[in-house]
View 1 (cartoon, rainbow, N blue to C red):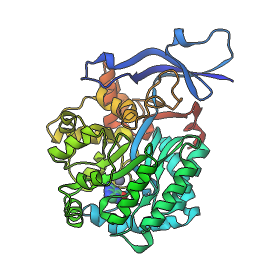
View 2 (spheres, protein in one colour; view 1 turned 90 degrees about the horizontal axis):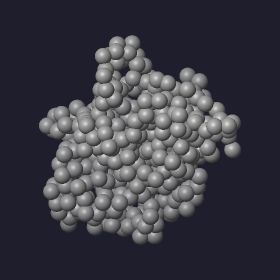
View 3 (cartoon, rainbow, N blue to C red; view 1 turned 180 degrees about the vertical axis):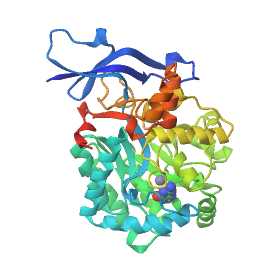
View 4 (cartoon, protein in one colour; view 1 turned 45 degrees about the vertical axis):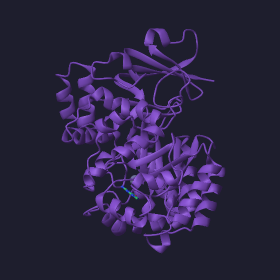
Length: 434
Ligand code: GUN
Ligand code: ZN
């Protein structure tokens, strides 16, 4: 098997940073290298230590760029690529006016395949190598998603939405068909290649109790499966949900009742949690996924990182396209930073970059495979350039530390800062030819 050596400035994380000066939380090699064989990382460190002697090895010189683990986006709707930038007053109006209209098109497999192809190419352009995606209610949309992911050999998690009320009839499954389709998709795709299936009840508002019972049955049948849903995103959504489930004391209690909580359960947004809910999230090791560009765009609210951390809640950070406004995880960090500023919290750039790599991998319980450049990891890698625009280059001239460079990347960077994206050791961005 042939080897490939990427040379450049190498950065990855080994632990959650405890602040901007926590140099123990990361590895940084000024003249570093990552050695790849068979889609896996077999060595990482100083170039002189990693370069194999006397072996045939392709060397790709990325100096002076930054080589990092591929970016991870743990909450995104692949069926909303054509919903991004839709003008609405709030979440429920946005869903009813644009999103539920657009998602109906995914009954057609050909449409799903075309959008899925665009979707994965876009992720590659933005340096995202793993995402956790919502498909539409249609089985065909999940088929399209996994078919295109498999073609690119990307590690993807996804699932068809289960939803049977408070949306157009064309977007409704039934408790039985939602169960049957989910089970069939899970049995077909989960663990096939790098694909992973997530049981995906959209949110409590769009499922009847009968459907929630069926979700519980699936979770019991497939206890190792991921579960993804939305939680406590917007005031009207919360009020409507509590009206629909008056027997439960708060939003999270609904999901608790139906057995949704656990270490592989991902709750999008989770903005307005009470102390009780935070406590239960922490106790069950459930994950809150913050989606800052979406929360600001839809006027949903401001996620409080410090409050969640203090309660011991596991946190991920994501784009939430199409409520979110950028596919860029760099822009997502920028938005998260600004939201935390408004909450009176500080988030330093070392911690931010941890969040979109190892942090999100830990949130997905996948840090043994992705999110770092550790030996044995999948060779999903991004190469970043902090001088990708003239104004960034100008600003970079007076940057004097790694933390400053990362902050510049997160504040001004976007897809132009992504020089290359490797998926399982294969250069993919340059192959797109644009
Ligand atoms: N809640 C239920 N569905 C959605 C969705 O598609 N986007 C967002 N942001 N919130 C939701
Ligand atoms: Zn969402």
